[in-house]
Length: 323
Ligand SMILES: Nc1ncnc2c1ncn2[C@@H]1O[C@H](COP(=O)(O)OP(=O)(O)OP(=O)(O)O)[C@@H](O)[C@H]1O
Image (cartoon, rainbow, N blue to C red; front, side, top):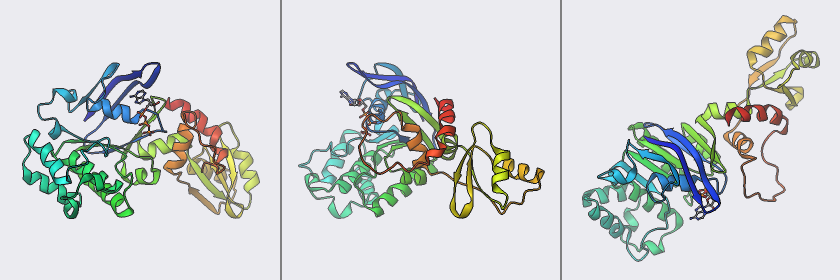
């Protein structure tokens, strides 16, 4: 369990993390999302005592990280996979870590095996690919068999097999009742891996909760409707907060209404319905909507964000409620 209360970090004039409060529960995978520079790494670094909060507190399993007698068995962290002595072999690096924390060499072999590093454990870390470095970082995080894992961009540089392995590993660890807190910029990956989300923008929490609830709260309910009397039905459903988008083959997508609301209105007016299907928005759609005001570093790419612009009216209201 990780509990932050009014956690704040300032670097000079820059407020990297701004009065952030949250609880990351055991037995779940919680995804930490946010644009570049939003404050994810700083938050994670404060959790493991690498950065000192300017104000506020954060505890892991009830105590500040530094107060734990065996911190590696409480919290395992992958924060900077490159922060390893590059002249050493992977095994030597892990053995040194184990020796200074009273961890057996048997455990070193276990984590090497678990992370698929057996074939390269004798090689110099300096020659490792990004993906191998990530695996070593995860092995280091797992060394103390910790109850809580904090992984900053764990799938960065991994091949598809590696990405899938991380997903299965973190699901397994959460299934054992551990707390898993991980950041990623890969939305599709996050939506498959995380149960809960914490979204940060410009140092503040802008959404938190179960993945589907966060998506629904941002995008709102959307229903696809097909009917031979569609214009008449659309007129009956017109109201504040409801927007309409043309869909395939003459159907329309209604944003801001549930299937029951549409079906009941149609039935009350004897309007035949040929399709009435709830539409699921993706996490990427929700994320782009949520963070559009919180992105500090805009690119000037011509490709449009994959967000239906017609949903923006409904989204703005919902987003306000999340703040
Ligand atoms: N040591 C530091 N000194 C000064 N400013 C810092 C320092 N560390 C972070 N910052 C600033 O704090 C803000 C938050 O940075 P942080 O690295 O936590 O963001 P992030 O969400 O992890 O970003 P990314 O997704 O790009 O890794 C940024 O504006 C960053 O420039």
